[in-house]
Amino acid sequence: MSIAENVAAVRERIADAVARGGRESREVTLMLAAKHQPVESLLEAVEAGVHTFGHNIVQQLQGAVAGLREAGVTTSNAVIGPVQSNKLRAAMDAADRIDSVDSLKTATRIARRQEARIAEGLAEGPYPVLIQVNSSGATTQGGCAPEALLDLARAIVELGLVRVDGLMTIGANTSDEAKVRESFALTRELAERMRTLPGLESATVLSMGMTGDLEIAVEEGSTVVRVGTAVFGERQREGTLSVYPARRIEDGAAARTW
Ligand SMILES: *Cc1c(COP(=O)(O)O)cnc(C)c1O
Image 1: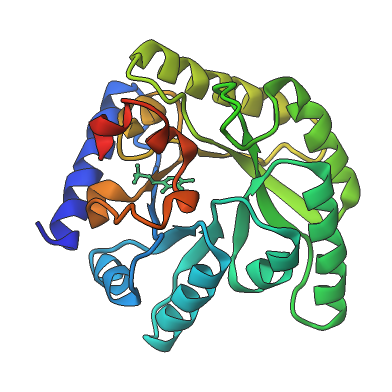
Image 2: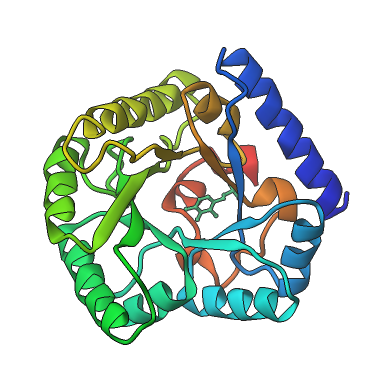
């Protein structure tokens, strides 16, 4: 199957889930998880109508953004993995949004750097982020604890130079569909509560759902699904374990999607 055919198949899965979820035919953005993909593959996806990519590794983000720009295509690129503080500056310069912010410490660093970027004429206004929530409670997952979210969101708004556009989560790592659904529903409820806070009224982005669980996520209100395997095929695992979401290598559930 070509990347274009795979993109079409994923779009069909999304459309079916939108219909089943009884939602308005509201748009769900297909973000492709680009880890380890060469720029050629990303360009094939662009040809197939995809304009949004998520990156786990800052160096790959930089390479992809440079390659896509060189090819003359306009894309949107987000960071979807943890960012080390010494990579934050490079990540902010290359990405349009950081979707994996889960602490005030990181948000404060982003605000400080954004202040400098504005002074240097590199940016205007606040830097956009999503707050990552650990909706499954798995200790292997990134994200702030659900009970800490509202305080964190409030504190980030106070920083002034970071704009919270919504939430990101990785669903529960289990073949128990009810548990997966529960983690997405929790994230949606948290987003609804967050939007009642001052300065957070327009934080409408809900990034949830991957190859193995995107239908459930869309039924539960996802506005961005992050898909890798279903479009690019199985990734090479050897030597690259550190960049995989912990859930994929943690237990037997891996067999479902790999
Ligand atoms: C790799 C990755 C995805 C995509 O996972 P697939 O199961 O391959 O679709 C989504 N989100 C994050 C954070 C990832 O690292």
